Image (tube, rainbow, N blue to C red):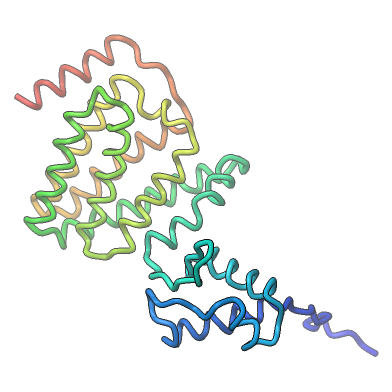
Length: 257
């Protein structure tokens, strides 16, 4: 008999996959609302006609998808899927990819540049006085934390996420935080070296200024300059010499006057 290239042997499915997909469809159809609990393992075993270990595997599969929360001794609870929870599911896989694939870091830097420049442009068009006030607060907190590296690094990421929040699209800040966390597998000491914090603050101030003016072209350009410099540091981490450090500190002081 002539073989047909598009056909392949049938792979036998595992029982827990069938059970999990049925439960998933029931949740998506609204049969189990967010916050409600599924029937017990014993009850589900009777409904599906399979053993309790099969039910347990199906529930654990749904938990890995971020659909259920399972606590010992309690029935599984349906939880709300959010942009943050979706992005979080990828974190360890992406970090492993960046750490083990020689090209992955460059790919993610390029993706971040394209994403955040587009976000900055949209943020300039959609920003409100209220959420710009929140961005101003993040900047002020970062300036106060300039000598506390862990706090400053966290506020660096929060600045970018807050810019993304200006768009009004909840997916954007979730992705922004995700990318920032994914890149943290690369040594941030090379990006946040002593003295560079002042330059980061200056660049963030420039971005804020363009957003405050609702200047979409300017916001995109300021974000591109900032991330292009930061992206270069992920590959090369030359030590700052003393004059450069003093120059950055002096510029920051002059700006604050």
